[in-house]
Image 1 (cartoon, rainbow, N blue to C red):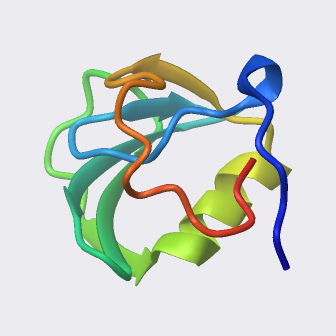
Image 2 (cartoon, rainbow, N blue to C red):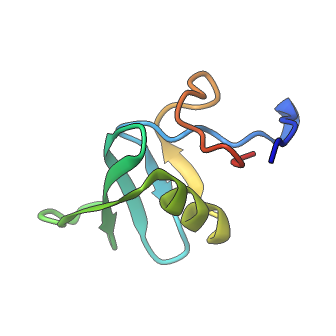
Length: 88
């Protein structure tokens, strides 16, 4: 499927080092490849020692969208290289 991307409602692309806020937790992106992403789920920003989890980029992106996650820290619209195909 091809989706038209409109600059007004485009979401930030996934990038290494980003911190996403959900209702009850944070997700920090540790490493990002073409298809696989490594991330940490944190209940508090001061939490240390959280395990690194692995998922596909599309699955994590869908999770962030379905939970209405907000980008707290990281790159914005400047780097769109790792946005999944139906991501906007």
